[in-house]
Amino acid sequence: MALKNTPSSSLPCSITSLFLSFSLFCALSFSLILLINRPTSIPNNPTSISQISPHNPINSLKVYIFNLPRSFNYGLLDTYWSLPPDSRIPSDPDHEPGTRKKPGNLQYPPYPENPLIKQYSAEYWLLGDLMTPENLRSGSFAKRVYNENEADVIFVPFFATLSAEIQLSLNRGVFRKKSGNEDYQRQREVVCLSRILRLGKNLVVVIIDEIAPAIILVVDFGGWYRIDAKSSNGNSSERIQHTQVSLLKDVIIPYTHLLPVLRLSEDQPRHTLLYFKGAKHRNRGGVIRAKLWDLLVNEPGVVMEEGFPNATGKEQSIKGMRTSEFCLHPAGDTPTSCRLFDAIQSLCIPVIVSDHIELPFEGMIDYSDYSVIVSVNDALQPKWLVSHLRSISKNQRAKFRKNMARFQPMFVYDNGHPGGIGPIPQNGAVNQIWKKVYQKVPLIKEAIVRDRRKPPGVLIPLRCHCT
Image 1 (cartoon, rainbow, N blue to C red):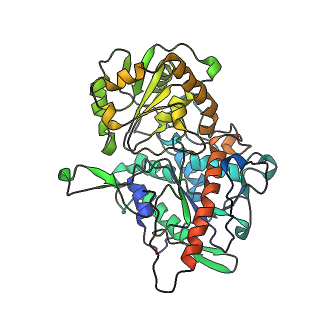
Image 2: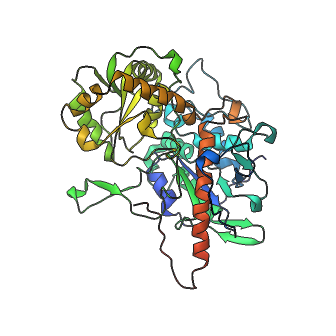
Image 3: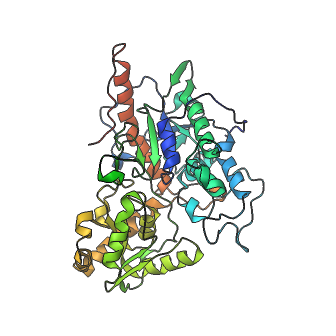
């Protein structure tokens, strides 16, 4: 079903803190799934992960696409491909001589190769799966329905990160402002359009400030920070204690990897102990990078490179990750980044240095099967990290790499079809996301039922926190 291409209108809704927060912390890839708010029975025995199969029509997620105007999704790609090269990077792969030209008038335009944008492409591949003709979707765990009353969830197809990146590319100066910020206006309209859903004869109001009946797809919770002016002269950050995002109801999704996949059969001997390429100095939790850099830069067997994700930097990263035993993954502006998934696709054992990281698909996979996870305090002890990595035996490293090869497909979005329209890999990232959403539905339905039975005038506290 083609998305309705209706003109945008100015809607008198106040922007909520959730969407405003995304505007300020655009490193969070962001999609919104609204749960159908209707009476339903709660299963006594929720389906386990091992029972979930795309071939079982009972165990599938019924998804209805919310009818946003095309200007909020594929229309944003039309806008992107009409823009000049991105001045934020030394060379824009989408506008270099000899690369693909600006696409013509396509219903489903290609997604950018610009690394600043490509790493946040989950919404594109999810929508592409849903827009694929039904006879080609036998491998998808999501069953698209065309009647909202038949759906488990409503997918809101807003390419939020692309919206933010276009604004940053065009006029970074207004990004944190309301006036002149087209991304802000788009977010405002999505909020307004999503607040009221007409479901059959029932009018269901979804208040985004109290988002218990919604599932948020994010690559990271790490962008939800506030500055505590009462501690450390306002220089320390801590997580916002609000009720809008939670591991109980929301889904952590992987970044899109930027480096090509290395198969285990193609792996060659690795001569470097530890590799890192990226910016030395970052904000918030990323201050650990500079400290680790100073501790490790002169260690034998360790390569620390500053670089940018342009064509030259990409080739350096491919070489560095494929010739190193371990790849360092410290926090940046947020606890995680696409670097982790590049390491997995390069069979370079991730070394995750974080006390607060949240990872995609946990419960389906155990990251300790192929990663080294250490606390910040341990990593910042002089000589400790290098000594710890050297103590891991050759056999254990081989076991990590073998396990990593098994899980590589789970972090791949690209289905290899133009415009993302075509069959998806059954064990790829899109299906894993649908399965995680499926797991969340009973919990949120229970919360909706609990909210309905409250006496008039009584408020039941929203409990989204896991700790």
